Image 1: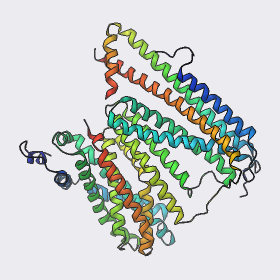
Image 2 (image 1 turned 90 degrees about the vertical axis):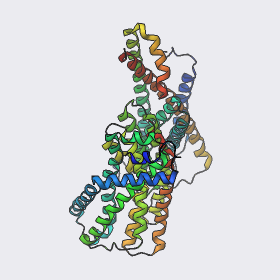
Image 3 (image 1 turned 30 degrees about the vertical axis):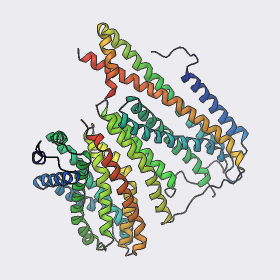
Length: 68
Length: 232
Length: 237
């Protein structure tokens, strides 16, 4: 099929774009997850600091809560 | 609990291995592999597109299986696996659709074709699991979300072969100009970079799943802590 | 509704699967016919959609036979969202689902009854709008092959739609979630039902229509059985 893509028939730009998008999305996702993990962890830390006397009770809840 | 400074933890080993495999696959696909006769340089997209597609289907299958196991065992671990695998599956499927379009434009002359059952089925699967993710994000942490999401996780997967067959029959009994890509090359020349790509994506999948499941676990711990704090 | 659970006092053995199904189906239809809050709005919506399609596609001449089957099914599927949305929202408003689930009711029988009630509603809708579109668009819609097409299509829509309705009813933004979850799953139904309807309108022989009816039947079988088995997970409290 004769393709008029404006760059000529065989264009490395398509190959480059395909690989670049995959790598960018993966690293973006990794970065996003690392940020989320750090964010959640800091919230957990500040919550635990704000209620130092109830740490043990909360810890027990940790174990039982996800079972629903 | 905070991630320990980089040591030889399994997660780090998998991460480094995945990154190395990605680089090797990239090298094999771009530098080592010769141009293909018909598709020329564009054939190289195959080495990233097809492994992405296979791992995308794999991760959706894992979502369905983990959903089923969760409904049986009610162990939150399986629900986290289903959720993580669905999210990564949607990202992979997005990449499949994008790299497929980028491949299709120079080789087929079109970004998209409605007459290819694989394309349409992939799009439908993508939408089904976006719906799955929306159900989870819109239901928030409501109790029972894990159960209802598991049902969607299973139904969406069962729908994949049914959709494929319907679209196939639709194009078969109702011919449209079919687009085909010729790949008549010696098998081994394709096989090595292809397998390298498969290995890279499977490692990357395992790495991302572990990471995503840990984020989900931390989130659930946070929610439990918040509930405990509110209860006081 | 209290009557089904009262009928099975603690001393009686609970009715079997089939008996439960009939009781619940009669209850569903009784509630619907008393309130008429679903059937009438569905029909009015479908007719309004047909008018919208007429002026969107200018359904005359050659365009008509190409587009009419799709127009009809899109109108039916959109109207079905009204029935499916009500299917469990009504129970939630009244808190009546808890009562049913406290009685020794099999969730599978409850699912099948709800789905069957939705099949009845869809069939009623089609009894109104199919002859009406035959009249308005001058279509040959009195083909015997359309009977199994619509029946199998209805079972597919109601079968998947009923379990999704139960799921959406428990989530926030249920009105948005139901179509988002339903339409991708209905792609095989849309493909097969629209093709079968188109071929039937063209007056094509049975052999041409049969493959599509087979697709619909297989879809219905797979998803109704699977949903009946999985339904318990969506109503557990």
